[in-house]
Amino acid sequence: MDFLFDIGSVIVGVDFIPSLKQLIPNDLNDADDRLHVLLERKDEFEAGRITPDEYFPWAAQTIGYSGSMEHFMAAWLDIFSPNEPMWSCIEDLHQKGHRLILFSNINDPHKQHLLENYPVFENFTGGVFSYQTGHIKPEPEIYDLAIRQYQLNPDQTAYIDDLPANIDAGKRAGFSCHQYDSNNHEAFLQWLDELL
Image (cartoon, rainbow, N blue to C red; front, top):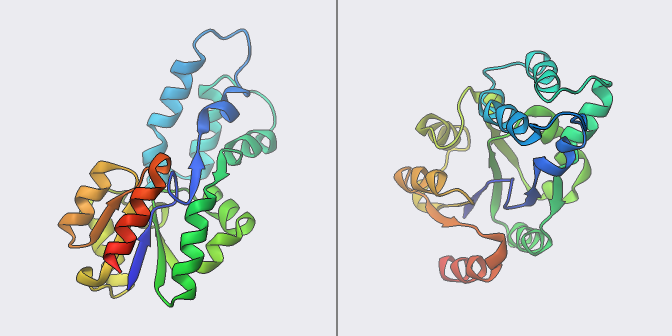
């Protein structure tokens, strides 16, 4: 069977706020508003509609950061945490011969950082990454692209994501879907057991 895995809040935990908040000068009293503006435009960036050369200087300016871009990028990358129960499942699925494919709204620096630093990603045969496609989930085009690129049979494809809108789009594409909640990993294990 083929498995499409979202990355954020499924394979790894994600929290932008603590890391990026440290970059905001203490004398600014609207830190939360600034972060909201930065993250609101992230979808455009992750869809590849804004280049890194445009997004990162704008993001730094938006939060009032005036230090080095190297320090900014270190904070940008320092947002992930391992989801070890899911890692065990991924390794088991891989060992049993299932094809595992990443399917993520993500930007290139985050993708590169994850692939280089988290060995769990060695279990995947490839991926469809939003920044390379011009589309983000739940836009139907990115689901169609995944089906074509990996010659998926939707009836034989399982899809795991944490966001309801993405899961709804996955169901419309014909996948067997599970909306993952890291606080209820047991529900995923039950779904997986019934699926297989």
